[in-house]
Image (tube, rainbow, N blue to C red; front, side):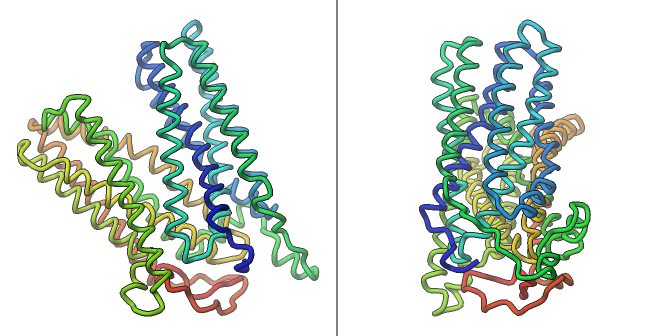
Length: 466
């Protein structure tokens, strides 16, 4: 893609707006409806847990969705189609929740269908959105672009949760349906406006029959097998799975840990989660700023060039996350005398830096390897992330329950779980480092790639087969 076709900051912000819309629908269905099922309808907490896990499980379809956009050559139809399916799933999920009050079995059956649609919608729209970013954002802008898009997604979470929570008071089934319908319809309409004439016509005309054969992706199974045979793509898939397992396993046990070991009230533990999220935001902004400095001064000195190393930030973020988790191990063993808030804040900063390093790396690696397999690669990594997130909460809570059953002291039990998560982050750091030394896969084409931008680094292949 030539520099003339690269996205500017306005285009990137429009993509961030789409990501925010996606997050708005997801947070409403996985958080607000969760609470209504458990509190207002007095249903077992296992039900929303299974439904949320189902929407993650369905996302194993991401590689197939990505392959579909590879075949067509355009991502906009898949983003719009995915948002339409996601919005329909959100409305059906609210309808199913209301129906559970009078007919639980019928409502649950409809909820299963709704969460399958939510998973499929996220798969189609989220995968193609990331591929479009990967193909249309210049290398020097990727750290800042990833930060902008993810911050806007978090803003979509926060704004939707706040506004929807206000509009749902006092709660009634009619209000739930109206608010959910308005959010889903609004998210789809904003997505349509944000994507209007954004991508353009990216499918080029082949000059010969041989070019057509070379450019057209093979059937899905063959394309997936080709991508899996690429050493970097395979290792990065494993890295995503392990690192996201460590990242997600901590979410559901941090607040109970603060309550049982440090005596935090529900309000205080919620504020502690806010401290962590503030750290995540700071970590993301830190990587974006480092990328901007590298783009500005990277040609003058190796130190500035190193600041833009996405592999460096991924590895450093994993190591720093492990150290912060080992700090929580010390907190569990201290009997409540450890500076918990600073440790949690540092964990958030490390998680934020790791996230942007990983996402930026994902954007770059999607373009490495065989041509027109970008959607399959991004889908493969998205599927690994979704399955890992689905398992993370289950593994984290199950491990903490098992540890507390085996170990009488709560602090020691939680410390053992945090130590396991820290070890997973160290393993993730080793995997990320090894990706930089892997041998490029044999590809259909092999032409020398231009000199790398200063923000590039050894995490990526040194040849471009396109």
